[in-house]
Length: 414
Image 1 (cartoon, rainbow, N blue to C red):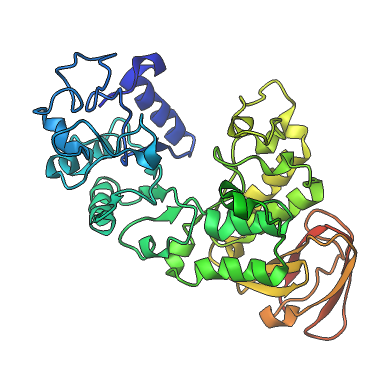
Image 2: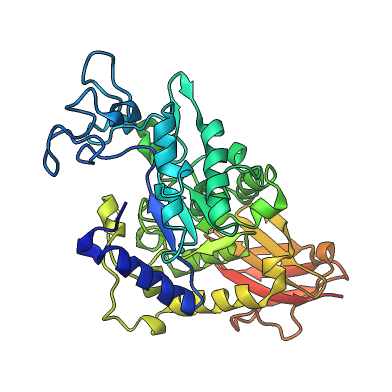
């Protein structure tokens, strides 16, 4: 296995990894071990890059034939999502398991070793990996993969693509985290008035436009986190945007305050917030096709003076500085109508995101006493916005929130 020479070859990856680590950064590579392409050497359907004597498709006696699902006596094969250019790998083959993760020079182990020393793997379409009709091997193979990865680097991050409820993979023996669409991106977007892009794939569901209420938001997030060990919850890969969804800020129903509120919720959830490249630059694009979220980074733009950059800059530093955001407890202290208040707290302070997706002004009673907190004495939120709020007793603050407004309170404890 090698890096394509068009990308600089193996040496370029080694140099990149070294430079990143010297600057306190991590490197995670993306891979699909669920399928290959038809032009891959193992399959080699059309003989574009390799002689047709090589590979599974044209040579029934090739050792790679057992790497795939072929109908006996034919060249009919199983493909991921019925995409004919993406033949599915068959993990009943012990030899395939050796090549992918067991052997010392297997693809997953090689890049974890020096001089590449990557810090983890992101697995494409992990939700369907090793799950093929009556052959269901996922919960047999994933623990083996985890064992191989952690043997090379116990701190390596095992990140998996899954859009749904995947708690069965998150009990400590398989994944460290999914791309957390289910417990972060999907409910937060739908609470803020955007469509659930996973449901948009089904025409009947796409026709039903529905905005979550605050209790429904809390229910959806809690449904995910309640099933996880806390140490796994702390590793959740919390995202709002990705290469597979149209960018939040490009939707016509989005505006700055809605986007800002969504980001506050993202950063206060337990786990690791993921900023999709370009969001901090307020990158352009479109929502009519997936290519609209994959434009080149606008390096010629004055990125550091955008509102989004300043928002992310503040929250990223806060995430590093505040132990309440790293190790503190998490609780939704208010959820009524379309107003939610999410708190992170420890024995020193509480950080509370108060987020409204309502189109009108709302006055709410926040039970700050439930976490031992009081309002910020300066009467402002962390970004300097004046608060229309007062403590009406030792436990309760009454707060007026303009339409679609969001605040981040840094509260002392009593």
